[in-house]
Image (cartoon, rainbow, N blue to C red):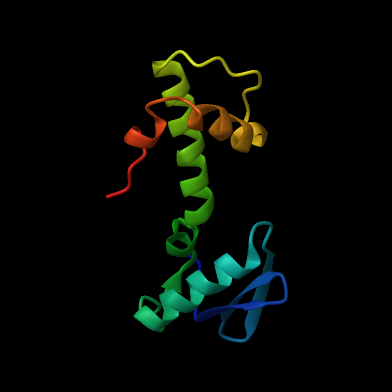
Length: 115
């Protein structure tokens, strides 16, 4: 098993240290999100003196903002299907247009009340 002593972020790389060696792994996604997550893991004490790369690889990180926007888009698609609202374009890039069309429907405000 491959082990590491500590992990950190430098520029756009995830830096993994083991004894006197270091490996840089390019971060291809949102660097700030990865950095915040690594800091949170370090603060929580999840990293001990010896950690395994397999454990690091299995950590899932997801963007909560993007997830909520995607859920809203899917909700609008379901709404349009349920009430048989014709949409000229379908695709995430048309999210605001779809929301605008759905919001003109008579039941939209009633269905989208946030408690």
